[in-house]
Figure (spheres, rainbow, N blue to C red):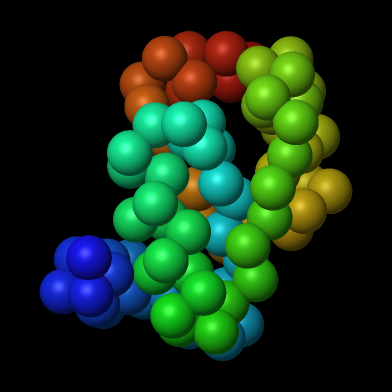
Length: 80
């Protein structure tokens, strides 16, 4: 997990000023990569209710001022 987190930090340019929206369900393994890489970089982790992601994605992105989001194609399909 350490090597993966480091790779994600470098690849996605996550730094202490970043705000990462946790879009994956906490019960889904890929959410751990977002969680650990965000915290390891000293960035801010933004967590929103699943319903906000599904029904109010644009507003959620604005509210949490997300600079990074890693999401599945299914979530991006709800984008207006």
